[in-house]
Image 1 (tube, rainbow, N blue to C red):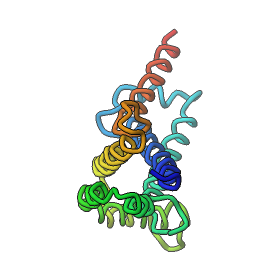
Image 2: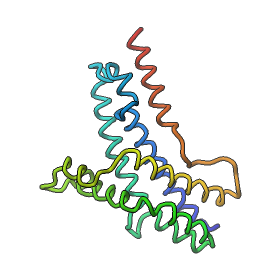
Image 3: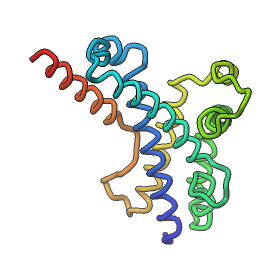
Length: 194
């Protein structure tokens, strides 16, 4: 495989891992049935509440930014489109077809994520009401999770090819950031009780 494909893969992989990390941290802190049910008092402790407000907001915004980066249409960036082009040049057409097939159900979601990223998060357009935009585009957290996990599985398949079937992976579906967030909250709760 050529170096250009490997380099593009590494950039896309980094955006993928970042998007998934930001999603998991945000959803673990704010999602129904997650940390907010068990750790709300700990997160609202006056010594830590500002951290959690900032972390929630930052991870939420970065989740949209990094997810949109994966599917950016700018030809000057490393994204899924550029990766598929380079895969085709390297005779990986079957995998390109698999990318197309498995990501097709997410086309509307990706478009909506990019719209919200552009209008509310990255550029903050005047006269745009964020709550109305979220309602209009109806993005659900589970849909984002499904998109990111599907993308991670596809990238893992490409990584296996790029590393000659190595069993170690630097990308793929994982819940490691969710676990890390819960470990942090457990330590915080223990510290508050001592």
